[in-house]
Length: 467
Image (cartoon, rainbow, N blue to C red; front, side, top):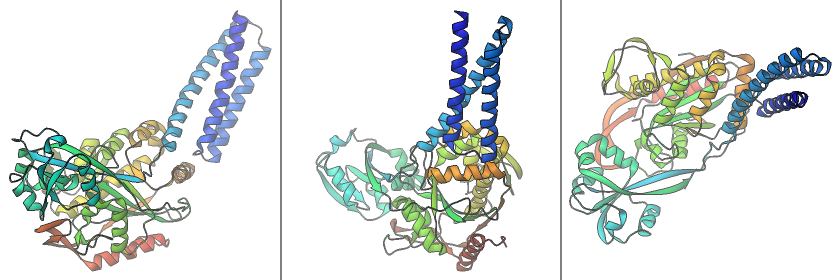
């Protein structure tokens, strides 16, 4: 029986290491120098253990060999689990072809309405009418439609009608400036519409050719494919030939023409309400550049990634605090929750949204530098994959992601990261998405927009960044 068990153990050992070698090869992110070393080591271990298995006759030596085999089998199994989780990560779909547009049915808390059916044949106010959403609501109930022409009237008219049918982005916008509306109303139902995106995938070899990525940070948590305002808009220009990275921040309230939306200008943040494709094309129009890829994240993404890599160190040029969070002038070590607030707070900052933009760039830079370090790649690799899984959207293919990881592992390159921001003049104005009210906007300083265009073009063309 001991001889049979000895042979079975040896067979399991052989099979486990063959599977390990196959998993490593299939994954395809290890540079050849590492791949050849690991495969050679596996083959050498297999040969040595096989020789020992054939030549060894003494019971004591067989026991020692069996213990070594068990340890190596354990290492092989653990390695296979890590490799399988990596393959699972890359096999998921991150270029989601649809975005979920959410509409709320809102009524006053004092009303007895509890679900959508309770509003059958009732008077419902409609703000920013959308044919698809109205059709979806009509499939559930009959109702008397009353058009609401301005955001201010949404809050004022809630007590004159039975309910209001409102896009979730507008609901968040109203609640941000009107706490009484939030406190006195309730959501009794929602309708989710799937909208197809109109962006094509690019086939750039990102290890050899420069490219632009729009980092779009939406102002919500939860599912990443929900439509929401794009509060963070940063163009990341990457040139792998020169190892140069330029982050170009565009303030959320920049007053721009939304691509393909209406004739009235609007805040850039509102582009997100109409989908990631509108955000991408609007930024392209503004900076007169081509954006090859987008990377869309939300609150949940940032917190999970920062925690997965053990926190980040960022610099602040001022002391500030809000909502129970405080940050000092100098280096701050941040976990996920604090990194999110460091990126979001703006009202108490000297410089307002301009200062917040610098903080967002500092957080992105700290994450990129830590993720591309050998220490984090080796120690926190699996946690990082888990934090990113289902937490972002991008039209960057998994093939390109693998290529870039392989490229970075091969060279462990140090990247020269710089940041700039377009600027403007604070003002008040009307917006396409906020009809009927005057709201804060930032009128673009065209000289800073032109300078941003020139800087991005220089990095793409292989020139050194010149502030």
